[in-house]
Length: 193
Image (cartoon, rainbow, N blue to C red; front, top):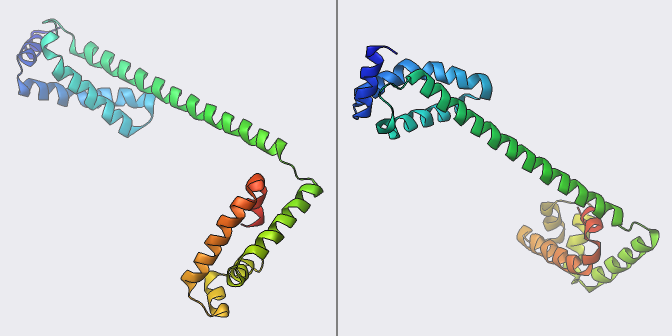
């Protein structure tokens, strides 16, 4: 370690901003590229290097007079990169675990889904009863939307009512169907898409 670096560390320890700026300007690019080799993400590297220099400033008074700045900067950068990678690995594991749990739930739900002819007969009976319970206008709007695949604007024009009224009829009908077919919701989603 040369006398210049010892002097620079001494000034930094006493809070000299110009010595900090010299250290920053002469080391930023090197440690940035060092971090970039491992993280492959410029934004993350930039954030980490800013943290490194913030740490240098915040802990400047605790530095030993013979601190090797290169070793200190690279060590802190290495440790912050390792922490970042560990965090990414944990997040990735959590995402994979959630995806696996979702797949298991989907498998169990699909496996237990009853698609027998008897079930569909029950559903058809419930649909017929529910349709019969709707007001004539609500029923007609719903049938045109779901069974004839017409747009709300087309239904409004044909029924000579406001489009908002069509939307209200469809919304009300769907609420009634959700209650009536609560035990068959996965199938209902596909029947009334």
